[in-house]
Image (cartoon, rainbow, N blue to C red):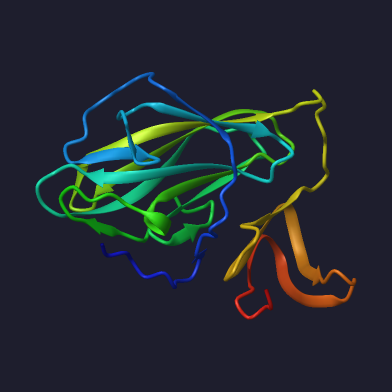
Length: 231
């Protein structure tokens, strides 16, 4: 199996941490048939066009869906992945990882590509993981994930993930400027997303001492290189 380069600007390696979530498979609409690709979940095949439900309370920093792809054809193919927001709650953000690389929310098609031999399935960091950050906003968001043949985009398979963030107390919070840090923990880069422009980002250690401060000049999004930081 071959994956794309794992070192490039704008993405980072996914962490090994996985969160336990409530996952259902709903056999809803099934449109189109994959020619040589099959969506997999925990090594089990998922029907093309099915909807997966990932549900947790809004106290969780993120909801995660894990998906794989299998080459059901008789020859090797090179695949990429794509994410499409179908219906997403305002104020939430989402991103995805594939082929050992994680992408900013602004990027919807993977830069990484994976070659699968006949009958081969993605594994480990090469699998796709969808990351949904509900912040304080509860409700349902729908996001479609597609695996497709790089050389034949019509050869594809997809599922829709319904992320459901539950508000257990029935209380709607209102924050003037929620700031998201992801992924956490991180080994290479830490991304900061703010609803309002930021002039600088300061990071303190557990003793309250200033560790790092960077100027971002009014940007809403920024990345911080943490690869040299002690674990």
